[in-house]
Length: 141
Length: 130
Image (cartoon, rainbow over all chains, first blue to last red; front, side, top):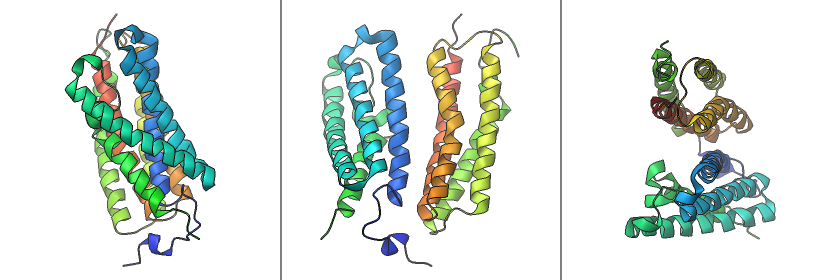
């Protein structure tokens, strides 16, 4: 069996290649589905749960930022991806906890409700994988 | 197709075939990624074929929108149709850019999301209004 390709991966390879390109696809999927969901929620029933829907929109922006950061790469892209993955992890933990503890504040689902259970817990795992990937590919002197 | 039931186009044998094909190809691509294989011509062509199958399903669903009652969440339904038709081509392009095992992981992930999209389409289509 051949060596895993990560062993031969150049140190200066862009963060949006290799496993990073898989992340790019998954982040792209979430950017699309979160913004579409937020768009429909805000356009059709904003008054029902303004907080939840604004949160949906914020999550969508975060996913878009992470996708863009991974795609452009370099120092700036890394910083964008790092920031958005961190906010995402905090967001999914806080919103997940709140949505279980205080159902009244979150009458309708967001991507992050129940730690992302509506999306197979991918929203919980994704920022961890993203942060791991960015850490693994940290710039080294 | 009965005019009072929109559910038919996305609930027929075509969507079952799409789901089964996507699951099979998804497992295949994940296995290939696990074996550290870059996407082969066959893998890419199979994804393209799956994309065609999805495209046919979407066309049938769009035709259904003009023939009888519509899903009550028509906007969401159309959003899912656009996502579904764009999915395999996007994965194809990304996998072409990534001639490593990760290219096959891209194909595998995309193939496993397609059944979810089809199931969501069926869910949305089953709630009709007017």
